[in-house]
Amino acid sequence: MDPRIHKILKKEEDRQATTIELIASENFASQSVRDLCSTVFTNKYAEGYPGNRYYNGCEHMDEIETLAQQLVQQLYGVQYSNVQPHSGANANTAVYQAFLEPGDKILGMDLVSGGHLSHGAKVNQSGKVYNAVHYGVDENGWIDYKQVADIAAQEKPKMIIAGASAYPRQIDWAAFREIADSVGAFLLVDMSHYSGLIAGGAYDSPAKYADVITSTTHKTLRGPRGGMILWNNPEYTRRINSAVFPGTQGGPLMNIIAAKAQCFAEALDPKFSVYAKQVITNAQAMCKEFATAGIKTLTNGTDSHIILIDLSNKNISGQQAADLLEQHGITVNKNGIPNDPRSFKETSGIRIGTAAETSRSSATAEYNLEWFGDLAVRISQIINVL
Image 1 (cartoon, rainbow, N blue to C red):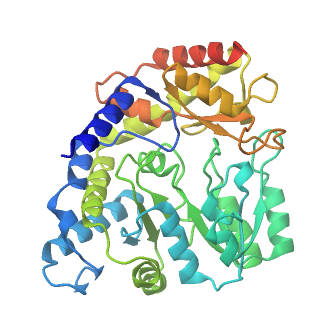
Image 2: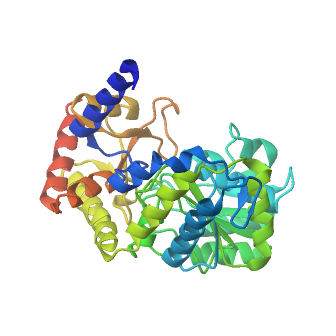
């Protein structure tokens, strides 16, 4: 290895080994998942799908991709899947291309309320190609489903997007299905943040409500960085597959698909359910200590791995808090709050996630609620200094 590259690698290995990782969109993949990312699968072009490739020599590419599909379909109880998207955003882009025309109206959660860039943000192609309107959350951070229904009734979107990047509570998938049906809209669920919790039975599944589901594979699911698309209607298969390839991507990353297969297999292990439930238990233990310390959390708690801390009543911005915590060896990210008085660059909140540290503790069989509670006390003390 080039010594310059090796030096940077070692520094990052040291950083991860010595830092408490509380970024909600990150996790620690298993050694097997990481090993598969660097196998000879990376050497092979495999444009197309199993049984219908452009290149010769794809027999084993067909095997590994088919296995990944079988495993993920078993994991989430769906009939069809596409495991080729390079990311969650790519998965969303493909679904938009499959079911929408440029200029069609989409309704998703506002970025400042906890939505994702690819749910129609103006700075993203989803907000440039399509006519995006948004719903938000109330002043306490909760989704107001009546507001969503009212906006849908007024705007008549062709597609409604359920799912979030920074929403701590259980999303009512059935309510979104009812709203979509009331206006004849297609329902896309982006479960990227919650997919591992759903796989482990710790968070309600959208499988019987959504027309199509998208997700990343690297957050709570604890796989390689990548995306996937799931559905049950056979009439969607050709549209979705052609929207991924050749519509929005070229050759699939077969090494990553192999690693996805491994993470799906790991998530089917009963031990994964223990991990998923513990992720939420640990987050709730932290929320309890934050409340005791006078630290406000949006929605006054969590049903997931996500905790949103409101710093609007503190003499510190989200950016300052994140930087200060990093100086103390704790990594979080700044996050906006409803009606945030500060700029998007500064923010008045931080987002915390418990999945990564739960993975790290589960690797040594040390599920320690007291440790997470003590960590919340430590974070509170650091924040309350200013």
